[in-house]
Length: 411
Length: 94
View 1 (cartoon, each protein chain N blue to C red):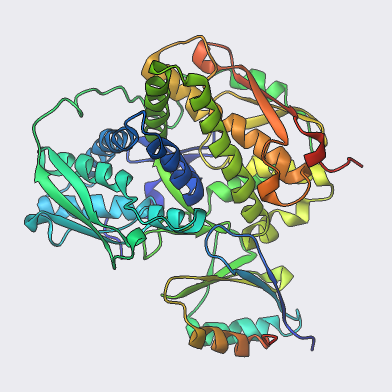
View 2 (cartoon, rainbow over the protein chains, first blue to last red):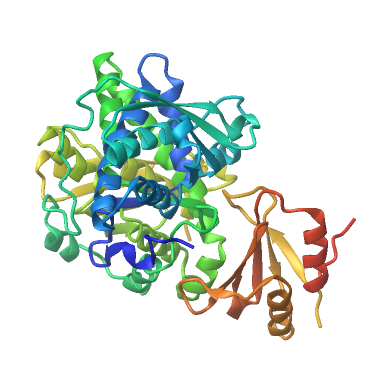
């Protein structure tokens, strides 16, 4: 039984598709995407992938835990640690046990990330909880005001019964000093919502009903701190974490002349995830109960999938044009990647939404692609033509066939 | 009464996840049996969607379709699977 976090803790706004927990806008992604993104960063020896993830998690969750302590009027250290632990489970990351914290040890008996690595890849004998190390460093600073270095010494991914994290006092740093976050239920930096709405094409699928139903689903960590829904494990991640991770990754790759490749990698992660995750979603009981009765034509699946994605906190995406099997044009005025880029780095000159670009290509491949899912990657390609991060009124994406062989023949 | 059938579904949660198709006429009774054995179900978000959760598995059902998806958790064992299959009248082909 949770003491602090309840179903009502999350504030949501159906029109904008925003979800806010303890002061931070959160987005839902599945364990597949989270572990894939981690693998992309940590696989390269040319950059500090683990460090990027750890620092982004520490900075993000220091703020979210601090906000939670204030919100729930934490009285003592036990209360504070319980709040940090409940937040972690509520968001869907698993279970944290602080009973041995005064012996400089924290354990975890259930983990979103371990599940991701176990289900997404061939078994690798390695520790995979970099994100949790960062979460704990941030949470402990919020609780005690002290810097700790947290490292995983045993991991369930390697066959350990539980994950074990060792704490060491660390030198003070300015990691938590920079406060750029301006989250709110309705981000100030959103683009021109009206213009996006006016360009939307009509459909017989009740997009709003789907979006509202999904946003109101009880998608919070269960007794094991995880969120099994739509045939995936979901987790609420503050959007700032993804933005810090992806922007720092892009910066480090740019510094070695590999910005374009980095962008492609991020896009590919999202495309793969989009194909797999949304395929699972379409075979779920949730889909059968809520959405299937509305599906009359093949393209209705695409509209419905976009309505589901609009409830995940990614930003509201509207379909500006669509030719079944051929092309898709999407627009969004509050995509989290572009807003985050604008908030953290200020206006730029490029387009900055590889996740949404990859998702758009993946959705087209899923609905219209041919053959096994694993062979559909690359069937469609997305170009982002406008982006809020370069002060365009909205982000615009055009997805078109890239490989005719991988697409079914249209009706 | 028609025999319960199952299809393997694509899921990122566990390999070998199946959706069981129950005879709609017997479904209400079967669901009651599952509830009395494994605990009461809850409505999961939308009225048509029910869920029974235990330490080792999760049953999610679209009531109007008379389907049940069994999502296994770690430590979900053969003893449970056999009992579940008996309740829903499913025979594993050998």
